[in-house]
Length: 478
Image 1 (spheres, rainbow, N blue to C red):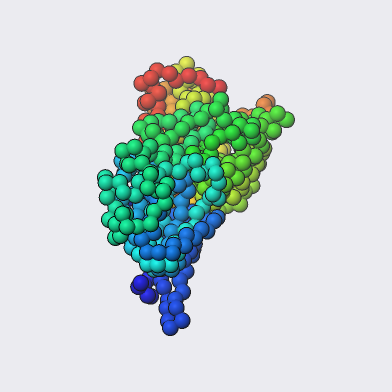
Image 2: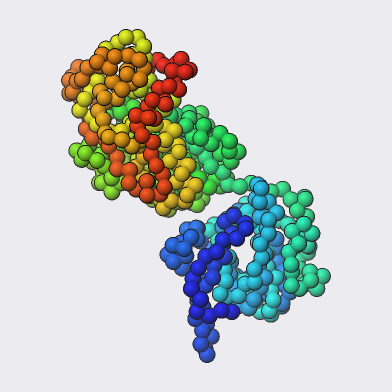
């Protein structure tokens, strides 16, 4: 055992399997170590797996050999006394199925074992105590989800120091299947809720080549129905992306709309946050510039909420609820444009028909294309960015809605002078409407610092218009 080494974390050839080198302090009385120190270990790259149960396996004799068991949770294994050879086999479905790693364990070494990786050990000294923290409570239901591999499997060829013929094994462990007979443990999946909306559709395209992503539209899970959410098999997932929302800003001011807005935008995210905490999920949630009153010209992630209407109030409440999930990303967006009805498609349809619209000139911001939001979600998850809130939109100088409309007319081959300017007050003079934030521009510095570089707004707009024009499906979606 090595005394006085620095705490460090090393990767292995099995994805997610990490070795921790622990400082052990000893003298004539014995030794002391911090076996689990969340703040320090997470800072060095250990997942914040939040253990809830501690188990200890006492082994009377050297040569006691246990495993190989893959379990439906993450765990941190270590030796409290003695020495052991720890051996792990990736039993998750995928290209690393069957990959192995082994290391000698004493009190100065621990290993983080992710969900689905088979765990085993052989004691090298009498009276060895093998300890492990897990992030879920054991149950009979969990026992049924285990995957097993025979300790003597020839294809993985674990180099047991003590031959298995002379080791102590249970009858169950002796009779586990060979690798060729093992059904791989299904990897935890990603779930996209609201899969038919603008962002959901963009995520379908973004993740089109992946087989580990499930998409659920309102027909499969209705955020307005808490029972529908509760019925989802959450234990199958590691990540949930909530791309659903009630976005009818004006209708939200009505009695029925108010109830729907609060159910979908506030209560449902709260229920998702509870599920995320219980099942160790990463929760991704789409927010809105409407959580602010728009008095500040640019909004950063730390600005206090100041919503003007029911829609913004319900979205702000949803953001607060999602923040209770230990692993969460909130992506705050503005002026979303994707598939389906949106401002750009409306202007293209009007331009094609030769209509001269009046568009407001006193609301300012940047467009956030749905595929840009999907790219940002993919980026944050892929790089493992710090959890929290991130602003997401295209980059470029802020513009008003009338400037966007004139750019759409110009790029559609129509005269931008056909678009006239009008104030928000004048535009809604004869139509009851919810208050809108005057300034919707979002500060993008935080997400840029993670290595994500937003697309230029005018370039993205041109590509979007060109794509629609090539399909010939621009319509007036008023």
